[in-house]
Length: 146
Image (cartoon, rainbow, N blue to C red; front, side, top):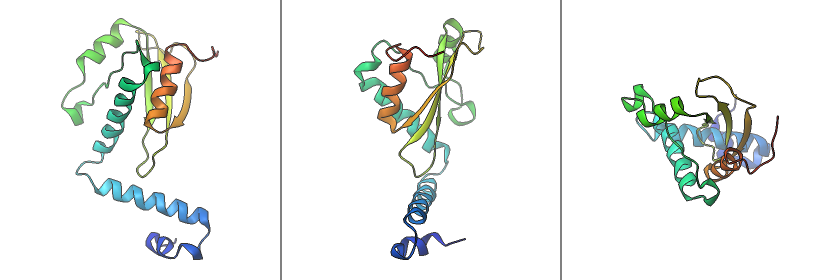
């Protein structure tokens, strides 16, 4: 196992892929140490994606909610929970990776009963790309896939 700082301080001595991996590892460790509770980092990403939904004209007519997490937020978002009980919806899951600026995501079409209601769609990108890609799917502007 190579020491991260050794690899980064002597980058020319190592394979570029090793340097890239160790840089991302170092950035991830630094990012986690920058907050009291690492869950804050996930919430920052959620907030960033929500901001992108709000600014993207392809997202017109899309209602987006953060459900909340009772053990972090102190409660669930009642508005989001009520919307899910009244309507079919797409559940978005984003795979947060500390130190990364590109994230994998998956959309799950869900009936108001809570049961799956179609095919999962997935992709990856920065927050702005995620918002754009998700809005293309949920507004039906992309291809119909089965």
